[in-house]
Length: 333
Ligand code: RIB
Image (tube, rainbow, N blue to C red; front, top):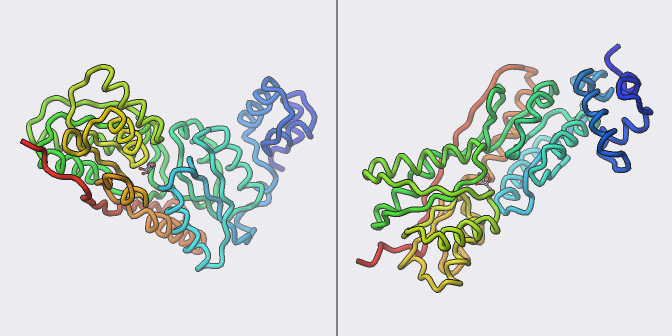
């Protein structure tokens, strides 16, 4: 008999109902007790009894999906691809939005086990590495989209972000830009590291020594903040390469407020090619990600593992980025 909720309650010195409140993410439990219960769950390697029943015996026809920021227009495109593929195979989704919080990621992973999902599709947040152990222990077919994880073997589907950022930076350099601020996403995300690598690769090719790197968190506000800081620090720059469109919009708003002409004085490019990038004034040059295909491919990978019951066969799919040039024009000499 595996570890039971009763064992966890005894270890933590609380009632079974208190443990149940915590593992189901319900409120009403003090932080101190919550921490004690989470430690007991970790120490006893407890998983709710759906795990003990053995997920493989359950045909729930349900997939669990976790996204870090449902308000970022990039993710709904991915979700559409996931949903369309799941529907094709008669599966439904449980969608969890974590707002980048690791405790929310853990809560949804526990919930997916409780609900006996047959597979998990995961877009991790920047703090996911703290949930790696839990993710590894849940023996359910899974696939990670967009943000590869360190030290865990798992199938992944993502864009070739090194190539994408290389194309974007090279485009700016070809337009005569020489002082390009790269606004990165959260530094610990593989997508951020790869886009930074693409930026460096293009600068090195052009013999540009000075790298100007700032860090945002993929939100509009962080794009505004980084640009405001750069102007206040009197950083000299003639272009901003934001590692996603939302941060690029933030940068454009600040530049416009300061009456800095875009793209004549400062060219701005983004990454993702969300719908608004074609509607902004000026329209935004960006790097297109095949977001819908990322979602669709991810479902095919996880279902293949479910149907074939082949464990430990990892697939890593790298999809093609595309430079989408809009109202950019070469630097005025
Ligand atoms: O805009 C959100 C960003 O987070 C996208 O670039 C996507 O690739 C993800 O990493």
